[in-house]
Structures are given as C-alpha cells and as structure tokens.
Length: 246
Image (cartoon, rainbow, N blue to C red):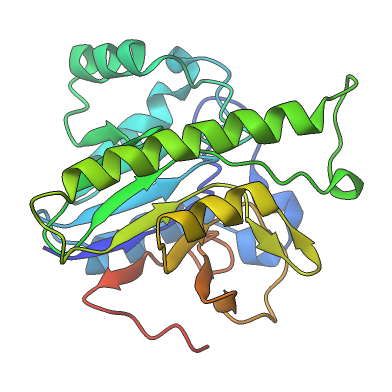
C-alpha cells in the first residue's frame, strides 16, 4: 500500500463553477486529475483529500463529483474544506455513500485511521488571519479557532488511542487551512501539534502561489502544501517517502 495526498480538487460536475477562470494552470483540471491519479495510484493505495472537494451545495449536487472520485483507483479519505457546503453529518454522509455504492469513500474528520505505515487524523482547521478572510456576516474568529482546536484535539486523541498498541507508527495530521503561512501563525493549532509531538502536518487552501517550497519547517514541524494546482494535479506520495525539497 502507498499513501498519497491531494487537496482542493474543486470539482464542478453538477454546478457551473469551474476553476479555469483562476489561471491557465486550472485549464482542463478535471481531466488532469483523472489522468495523473490513474497513472500512479493503485487499487490498494490510499489517497487523502483534505477539503474543498466539490462545489455542490448539497450531497445530491455533489454526487457527480463524489462518483468521479469513487471511480478513481484506491481508497479515499475525505476531509472538509471551507467550500464544502455539501458536507453533512458523518452519519448522513456514510449512509449516502452506502446507498449510492460509493464504497471507496470514507470520512477523515474529527477522527483517525490506522494505515500500514502511519496513523492519519484531521479536521478543517481555520485560517484566522482576518486580513485574508472575506465573510458575508460578522464573524467571531476566536470562537471558530477554539472550536477547530477542539476538533483537532479530538482527532489527535483518537490517533493516540490507535497508536497505543503500535507506538512506532507516526501520527500525520491533515488540515484544510494552513496552521502557518508567511507571518501568520495559528498558535492554538500549532500548540496542539506540539502537545502530541506531531512532526508532519499537511494542508491545502492556498492557491496561485507556486514559487514556494512544498515543505516548510516551523518550530520543528514540517508544514506541507498539498493544493491540487500547486501539485500540478498529481497526487503527492507520502509513503513510500516523497522528495519534498522542491
């Protein structure tokens, strides 16, 4: 089994909201995802998708995009992004997947999953740099950050329980929002990563910035950008270990 990650697919199979208006790199992006994914991912592999999966507003609107993902090789663990308005309760989503025969899809959100080489966990997080947020209504950023920190804490506690009988396995964290970006630091999230001795944290959300390293280390934690456009729509291998120096 190999483990891959690719976030921010921004699929629009039902709704008319293609990402192609955001630059030439997005041209034909759905076809690029299908071609690149199918070329490297095997049926026994796992791919983690940390959010911004579909522009659908409901599960029914997202079904075309979820079927597209289900048709690709491998098992997929889905995380929540800020544009995943179709997202529902875990129970409703699991029921929806089962009823629609979407058997390769599972949820990675406020929970953890043990794989061959590691334990993975994750939630959405929150990019609370208010200068870079655009919200329609007044937003209590501190409240959101505290809530997301609680969700990450729940995920990490689940991961620690799974590691109880396999202490050699590392815990990898997958968020949608970056805990650190430029001069911004979400201290609540970073402190939780330190508390659980996390050394690798993967995130998406950032688009149009292609001249930065894939991996940047902050306070001993590797912060790794996994947005699909940044990765040229190629799932990034985690195990076997990938070269993240470029």
